[in-house]
Image: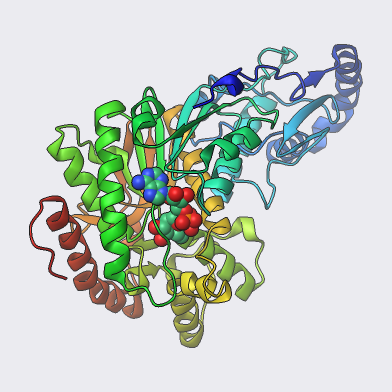
Length: 458
Ligand SMILES: NC(=O)c1ccc[n+]([C@@H]2O[C@H](COP(=O)([O-])OP(=O)(O)OC[C@H]3O[C@@H](n4cnc5c(N)ncnc54)[C@H](O)[C@@H]3O)[C@@H](O)[C@H]2O)c1
């Protein structure tokens, strides 16, 4: 394993540059203007104006607990005049970038939380100028991707590499990961990229890691049965989670390898056998279902993408994927035909991609995007923000031991399973919810039986 490329990338200079003199000048001018303008503006209008001038990268501290955010060790941002600072936004430096970008990892809730935070700050009198230090993101989390050389692993690693919250990115695969790491390590973002190949380097890869993401395995190919996929991926997930239990039992574990409905129960059993199972820190990544639901609904109803939020519950295969369209925000009405068409499209969206790729794999780019969003949310949660996402987790929402629903995440992982989405379901949703349970139950039992080395039936 070549570790020559392990020199850390430390220069954060390109991210944030302040012109102190310019700031001072603008502040004085602003003071003068403020005298005449303040009187005819409401606080919310003022906040909106301020927020619009903020420059922000793809991930920011913006949970509902604004007081926590203000003290975040990642960012301490204060309202500043337009063009007064240059900051890293995505892949280029920009003088002014709206945080409410349609392409950002920030969802609508995060954006409005951020706006609230600025609203509070903008009303504080005699605000001091932000120091250069206080504006620098302090990357501090270690993330490992297991299966990093694959179709999902590579773009996922790239997206995680752009996160200002990550200090170290550990890439593990059984083959071809050295080149991926060498390539990514040339990106001038804060994280140090390390490569690990083969079982002998797995333990080293996992030491001290905060979040482990597992997209290792084989994707569905035309002609492949679910059992074929299960048999290969179940063993891969089992082996990898055993190593996680031995080397970083406290980490958040994100399972992407399919069938998620079974691989998450397998991971839980393995962790139990190792005596380190913490149900709050084991997640089946179902974010792609939410991303697809949001996209398809926005397209159908001609809505702004960032505004749309559809909770998706149940599991992560076929009819076990249940978008709760009646809970769509903003509130929209659908005809019965639209509900049927959208639900079926969201459930079969994976097949849409498998067929379009005609044997060249399954969804990789959209999956990488969705997984990166879930990583970013987890890092923000670890940092003390309250974050809401849908995920497939151990649950007491109904009789099934694992279920996907909206969850509240915090420093310790799952803090709350949000049951409100299940109140007042439509008849269609209620029926679909009952219909999915037997299939999901069978997948869960199949995973548990595999991990307990009992004969696998379903
Ligand atoms: N959760 C979701 O929403 C979702 C969506 C799409 C795909 N998937 C699943 O993600 C998995 C990966 O898909 P892909 O398209 O990236 O496949 P891929 O074949 O392109 O990549 C898989 C990678 O895993 C590696 N790998 C295999 N065995 C390994 C092991 N024991 N340890 C470490 N690495 C190992 C391979 O070398 C390869 O680089 C599949 O199981 C697929 O079904 C999940």
